[in-house]
Image 1 (cartoon, rainbow, N blue to C red):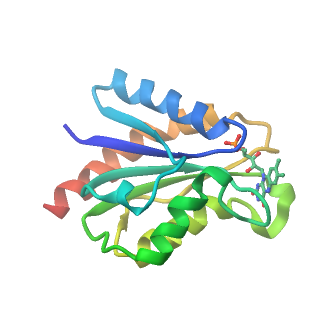
Image 2 (tube, rainbow, N blue to C red):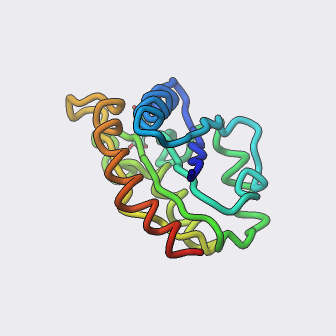
Image 3 (cartoon, rainbow, N blue to C red):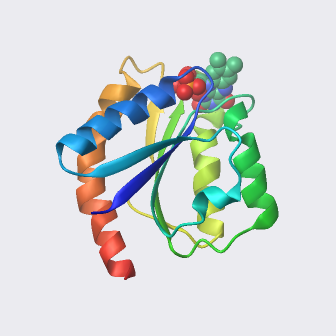
Length: 158
Ligand SMILES: Cc1cc2nc3c(=O)[nH]c(=O)nc-3n(C[C@H](O)[C@H](O)[C@H](O)COP(=O)(O)O)c2cc1C
């Protein structure tokens, strides 16, 4: 069974609430997931080849949240070879911030792909001002992503 590591970058808890809902949806469908808060993590969070889901909000001027800063900086500095990593991204943001919409997740996407990791599917972007709950949107997105994008990508990798 593919074990998905959900790495959570959050300031006010939305991304963590999303991750918890996703874990439940996945578990009901027989898929394993582990929630890992990014707090205090560094590039070694990607030590194991396999499946990752970045679930992060955006702060400052299109920046990653505080609890993701160390992990992001460590990846930028150490530039590990992540060719064994398949990942997805859930980027939380708010369109009222204009050009920096969802840039926290999109910055992770750019960096991971530069380091050789392979993204499965498209980035899910959630707009906090759109009138939908991030938890609901992500819970509808997760199974098709997991079963139709992630699992085939993992199988092709071996
Ligand atoms: C001070 C502040 C700055 C923010 N900056 C941005 C931004 O630059 N771009 C964006 O898309 N969203 C921005 N947001 C919106 C958050 O990313 C969004 O509300 C998200 O759902 C919060 O998730 P969290 O509770 O997991 O931190 C900002 C929110 C706050 C409060």
